[in-house]
Picture 1 (cartoon, rainbow, N blue to C red):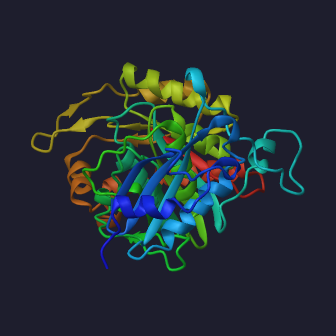
Picture 2: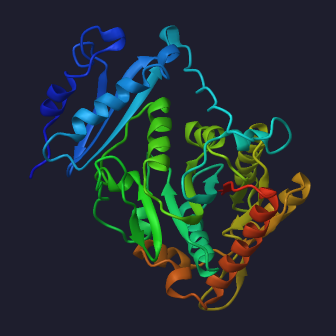
Length: 380
């Protein structure tokens, strides 16, 4: 059965009453950014920022009516909260305190946030800037965790430039058996979810910040992850809405910062580190990626981006240094092919490096957890 058209989706949405039961959300011109691809429908509803939480039932009603349409295999609906006069949207109110949660202390904020069912720890991989190998690091780190005997999933949180489907050579669309929860895709034994599965690779995601935040929350909590020891989250570069969403709405155990060695990259990595500290997310350590280059023909070493900068930065900032990953053609080539080195050459020298980093990271996660199940974050 073919996918519905945009006009058909809008016709269905006319069934949904607007705020206070006045009119419908289409007539009120509240619908924007409708994407339809192979039975997947993604759209946003623009609302006043002050009423965003109050109007969540309206969002859920819109999701239900589109889900019921013939040819629809999955729906993602985001509330785009805006203020008039150019004011920024307020942050979402914190979720209700869980019974028995600590009222104060280092772990209080994380304990207040709702856990993702079945997921014991969440590790996000992010970068202070782009171009430092963030996604490649995330994939190989996840696979290294799996080699340690852990049940591992991956969430591609880079809404604007999802790359995990290509890095893991995964194609196709996730199923929605009950019309509500998505079944994650599979790649090298990992459970994977990405916006790249829901829209075509060349479709631009021209979304405002609140819509990104809503989409991230849905991909995190409306996916049937099953029982996972670790969910690795590949964050987009920078310190924007996606990072704040994860830090404020998910109980994170900590952050791992990944950077290349040169000063400019370290400046951005420092910003990322300080952002997580400001929202009370412990920093688990720093990884130096593209640490050095060994010529495959002559064996000569060249420190193209410098060397040791991330280690020195870790010392200055009093955080653990987790290891160095070289700039090597095999890592790059296998990433492009969708055959990551940790999966295809598990006993090779590069897989060994990722394994050592994974062991150190997991030790930090375990130590930071202090007896509670919580996630961690890796930044590049």
